[in-house]
Length: 377
Image (cartoon, rainbow, N blue to C red; front, side, top):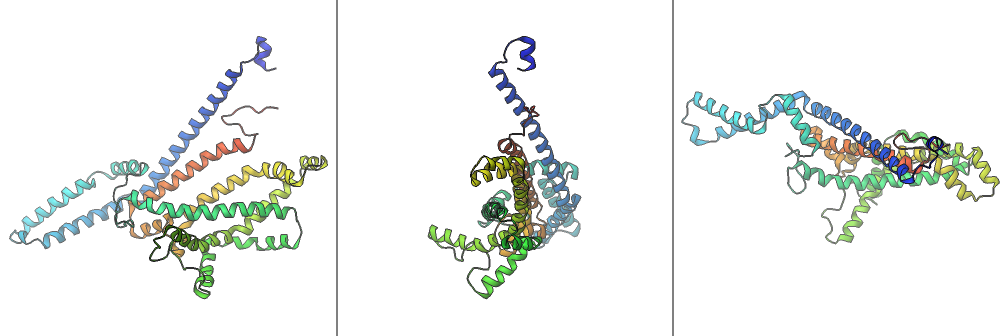
């Protein structure tokens, strides 16, 4: 009986308890959501300041405007009769009009907040130099075309790595000390090299030497017209980059989770389950795998986010037309709108992942209570 029941002598209505639970969860969700939004705003604003060089890129844009207008005037036969002073005044008026149209006549602090709002809403206008495959300069179109290939590559590689390493680690935990277990332990340090490093060797072996697989890209050139043949071509091009992702981390992650499973396998409640005669599969699922799920999910989510940024080099090595390769091209060309757009996507993914992790914890671990709920003894 609760304290409220002891003092009033009446039971607490179930509806009241349910309402309190939903209110607590709603309050927690709101607080976490607001916190993550503020974090994203600060991160995007700092990215804008860095990408713009504190206004340096805007000064480059003003210089480009002057050069373009000067070139146009030099090729305009109607202006040749003007005196030098008149030409300079006319050129300056055109420059001032174009600078005002671009909003570059305002102080950088004002412009930075305008860039912030445009960045958060992905209303980034036109790219400075880059084009989409369809020839569009709109940043939304450029990012939209590159987001799908990156999601395909990273989701395939990470999901395959995740499930393979977890089940392989469970397999190794049942064979502690065997030859295979020792081989995995010995190969774990090889995961110190990034995925693109192994990708170079895979290209040299399977593309250059053996000729079995393509060097890079996402589809054959020219692309097959048949949708089934096109999908088969995409799968064929996925083999090497996905293989590089898996090879770069499979031994370390398997060793890491195998150690976790061994620790939880030695707990007293596992010995109690064995004494009750429960099947080994049920013990692994309910008494070994379940307690480690929060840690596994956290590691998987954070690894996935980090590899979004790490895909910059991997996609460049394989010529994969994704967000990572786009980011590298935008940095080389000082294409600020595209750089800000990629940073905003990364920030949104990170915030969404952290937010969903809090919810998933409460689902997979009954000990976690959202919103500061009391633990039941």
